[in-house]
Length: 465
Image (cartoon, rainbow, N blue to C red):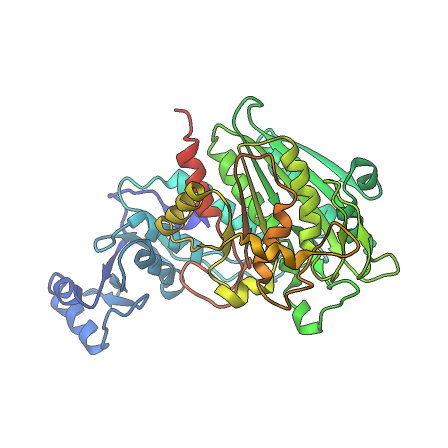
C-alpha cells in the first residue's frame, strides 16, 4: 500500500485533488477554468460525501479532481479513500480543502489494498497520490505495513494458515526486527502449563501452539499484546451451521491485529519491552475434541466447566493472559474475534473494549476519534459475574444462568479472572472484517483498533531522537 504514496515534490507533474463540501463547491468552481466549471455543472455534481469528479483541461486530459467531503475531522478526510477506486492510473496530489491532508493520504493508501495472492492476474496499475508538504511518509508507511500485515493474515484461508504457519509468521516478523520467538507445541503444552490451549487444539491433526515473542530492551517498560489465534473455528462438537463457518478463517483476527500493532511498534522503535503471546489452534471436530461438560484445568489454577465448545477463544486466551500477567507488565492488551454478542450490540465497524482503568479508557477513546479508528468502551459490570457460576468447577466459561444476556460483557469478565498483577489491562472484542466496500476499508480482513493503539503507545512511549 505504501507504494501508492509519492513524497511531496513540487517539480513533479501531478493532477490536483481538491476537497469540497456542498457549501464550498461553488467557491472552488469559481477558481477553476470556465470549461471545468461547465463540466461540473453539466454532470450535476453536488459534492456528496466521497463522490469523485474528474474535470478535463483544454487538451481533454484530466486536469483537476473534486472529492466530496461532508464532515469535519479525520472522518471527513477519510473520504479520500474513494479516490483509489475512482481514478484512472496516473499521478495526483493532495491540494486544498482537506482538514487533515495526512489522514486523506492514509485513507487513499488504505483503500488501495488488494489481496491478490490467489489470483492469476493482478488488478492493474493503481493511481498514485503525492502527499502534502510536511507529511511524514515514513510514519504512514509504518502504519500501512502493520495494517497490511493484519489484513493479509486474516484474508489467508485456513488451508494455508494453520497453527504452524501462524507461528512462523510471528517468528519471521520478530526476527526481522531482531526479536526472539519461543514456541511450545503439541503435548508439550501440558508439560509447560497451558492445558486449555492444548484442550482446544487437541481435536485437530494440526498441533496447537503457544507463541511467545519478545523485542526491545529488557529494562524498558513492558507492554504485552495477546491475540486469539484460532485459525479456523468449526465450533467443535457444538458445531456451527455451514453459513456460520464461511468467515471462520478470520477467527485468528486477534492474533493478526496484535502482530500488525507489533510491526508498527518495532518499526517505529518505541522504547518498550514488547511481548506478543498468541495461542494458535484449530478448533476441529474429532474423537480427540473437548466436550461440553468437560472440566479443564488452566494455567491460573482455575478449573473451568465447558458450557459450549464454540466459545473456545476465551479458553485459549485465559492461559495466554495468565502467562502474560505473571511478568507484571505495565500494560496488557488482548484482542480477539470473541463474541457475536459484540456485533449484535455495536455492529461490525465499532469494536467494544473493556478496562477498569478510566484514564486509559479515556486516552483510547480520544485516540480512536483522532485517527478515525472507531471504538466504544463497554462496562466490566461485576454483578454479571454470577452468570458464570458453576456447580462443579470454579467457573463456567459462558453465561449459563442469565440466558443470552450480556454475551460480550460476560466473556470479558471471564478473561478478567486471569489478570490480576498487571498495572493496566484492556480487552478488545473485534470483528476483524469489513463486510462491504467503503473508503479506507475495503471488503475483507480488517485491522481494528491498532491504529488507535499505536497512537496511544507513541504518546506514552515516544521514540528517542
